[in-house]
Figure 1 (cartoon, rainbow, N blue to C red):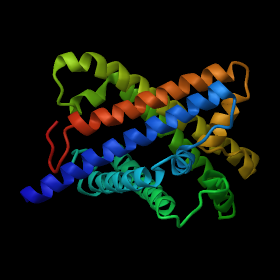
Figure 2 (figure 1 turned 90 degrees about the horizontal axis):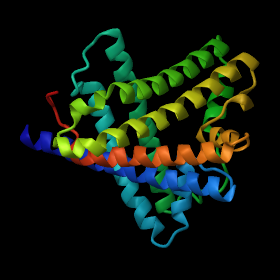
Figure 3 (figure 1 turned 120 degrees about the vertical axis):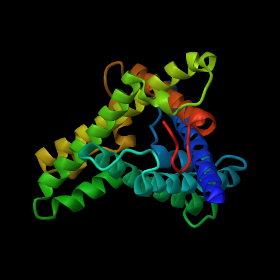
Length: 266
């Protein structure tokens, strides 16, 4: 049992670290898009960008391992309820979100492995959100399902912002008060920025359900491009880039001070 606890703890810490590094790189690319008025990238685009850098394949391989570890940790959080959310409706919603996160990061890890091993060139831009909306609209009650999906994504964003506002992340951190003086604002701003991104993506998914047009749905890349095209878009994009970088810092902080493991006590 001790070995299992230790394994889970290291999976979590490596996973949080990998997520943090990916979001740091992603945030830097968003800032560059704001500065150079170039096309914005999403998280998968960040992996593609890393592939072209010196030593990028080694970095990608290491990040893919970390993202896979994070996906496994999310799976453990959801199925074993190591954070003790319970079985109430709200708790099941949280655990369902963790399960979705597990598959999402597993897919991202696979994309990283594919790029690192040259199984994929990374060329071409996929539109997973639009593709998912287009497929779902073909189902019975597809419009309603897309609307529910969009509302759920918006809910995730609101949950991030609520977590930032309440400071509920603090109960998981084993850090001395002096460190929390700067960890607290970094975490709040980072979580808020990511929450705003989720709200934007979810809002466009709901809009696509209203118009019955999958092209109206936007993923991360589409949302950032939309922001960039508006008045003061460059400033807003830079603000989001800084927020994403701080979310990456938040994840790196979690790698070191978050209370993790089987049966972790709050």
